[in-house]
Amino acid sequence: MTCDFSLAHYRDLLHAAQNGGYRWAGFDAPPEAGVVILRHDVDLSLEAALAMAEVEADEGAWSTWFLMTRSVFYNLASSEGEQAIARLRELGNRIAHHAAYPHVDLDDRFDPVVAWHNPDPDYMCAPIEGAVNVMGAPFFDPEHYRSDSNQRWRNGCPHEALARGELDWLQLLTHPEIWAYDGATMRESMESMLDADRAARLEHLRKDRIDLT
Ligand SMILES: [Zn+2]
Ligand SMILES: [Zn+2]
Image (cartoon, rainbow, N blue to C red; front, side, top):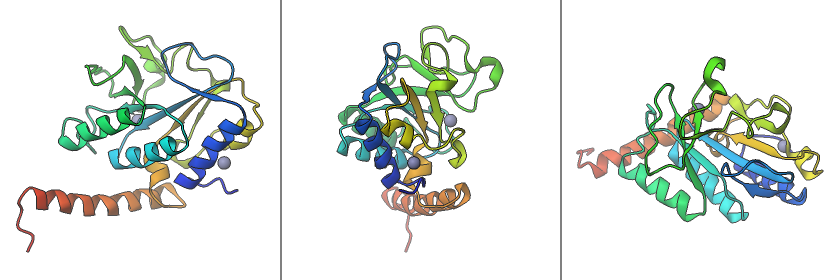
């Protein structure tokens, strides 16, 4: 098994957690022994989020999707954004807020759960009024947290530890863009994403009645 950043290996990770006897959980109750909390920060691409969500649904998994209201890469208020939220919910997922400090734009699209985008250490774990901060207690603990940032696992890919049931519980943060687009490096995955984005934008232009003849 190769620990690459592909949807195929993401599926392996889900299998590993299932084989390790874990069950899926969200941020509505303190983590118990035997749970894996799947968390996705959607920084760049709703299409990538939907592709990953289909893999999870296929495997009987569900997760919490942290969506931005102030992304320069996607517009959650567009028809595309509304459809993405609807599909994620339809697949049994939860929708939370990926907030750009200091703005917390919680509204009825979101559960009252927040993860800051690219946080500075001074506010990363601080309580947020009226919402759960997923990087605060009881959800964050370095021993029970793994993240795929920039295609680098700080403590290695967790699939083996999960399969062996070694972790008491885990908050597993993955960024869908890294897994949904091909590339052996972050740069290559981003180039794949930009190629796909060009095709999608051409289609938007057509729908917008732009003459591309
Ligand atoms: Zn792995
Ligand atoms: Zn982010």
